[in-house]
Image (cartoon, rainbow over all chains, first blue to last red; front, top):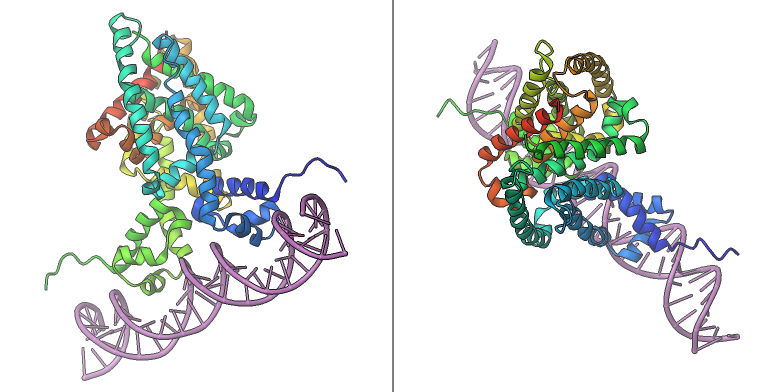
Length: 208
Length: 208
DNA sequence: ATTTTATCTAACAATTTTGTTAACGCAAAA
DNA sequence: TTTTGCGTTAACAAAATTGTTAGATAAAAT
């Protein structure tokens, strides 16, 4: 017998569930379909995770932190000078999104469908964001005063960054059908897109 | 008896279904819940529309054209000079999205969940887009040659426009919770956002 | 006045999906 | 060897959701 390659069924089910939930959402996902993906009968799924709801929560748990961290990453490392910091932030945020390309759509849908379930997440982000917005805005204003960049509202800028970095992954499959050639090579497209987004944001804040 | 205000139940059901489907998606929507929204028993829903599926298709039908038109609107009126044309296109596209703010997320989700159902839409958009991309790219190249704007790939630019114009509506409710004050006045935020997007795209194509 | 049409209800049937249970095999520990 | 616990299966039960039907009412059209 080969000792290796023993991934527990429990783990297989979790991974299958992740795929299924990410693509179909909570309502569209079927416990039987998840079990099939994992190569087990659906009784096994209930055996390990009791209910669909609990299985779902395991996945939310796993990614809640990632979501919050990713959002903050877009505002960059606070120790850098503001212009480089933003440039770096856009790039780093893009990379994080690219690592989990299905996550944003999934999470946004869940938040919209069942907002009350995520009150803790809101509060956490709100308090972190509040402080970070204020201090970053200060730096922007100071840099603008020195003529290093345009004076902009950090929240508006952040919305632009998130839009540019996240939306392409949301529409990826659809866009591929409409502009196939451009996106034929996924890796290449992603690199181009990152550069494009950095350029777009840098031009937005450049003093003119 | 008052003669006015006689909206047929059939119509009420359709409108209720639209709300429900837009918020919860096909899988999350419940025929009983739709009937409740419309103020009728769920038997009525089946009486008028037979199945959930058929009710859904009525809504897709209604909006398929809007989707395609909206996307093309982002590339502006082909009779205008290219720079103004793009400026106008961004603005016009934004307004169209703002008119149906829930539509993009809904449609994207449906397309991802059941891509095979939208093959006709793809083909239509693909053929229209192909021609429009080519001619618009020509104009951009010519204008770039004359030093009127930066040389850019129209498909990349379009992706940026769609990102900036659509994403804020997708995250609207969530964003409101995190940066409440900025978005407290919806109308005002939308106007600011439109201006921001136009500015961002104009700076992106400005010759430097 | 009669027919037609739209509206409505209540009960129920069918299907899909979720969740449970009992029994079985097997491997490792006692 | 016996026991213990994990993984497994198949069949079943329960719940949720969709879809149907028969019949009743009232207004509108003929």
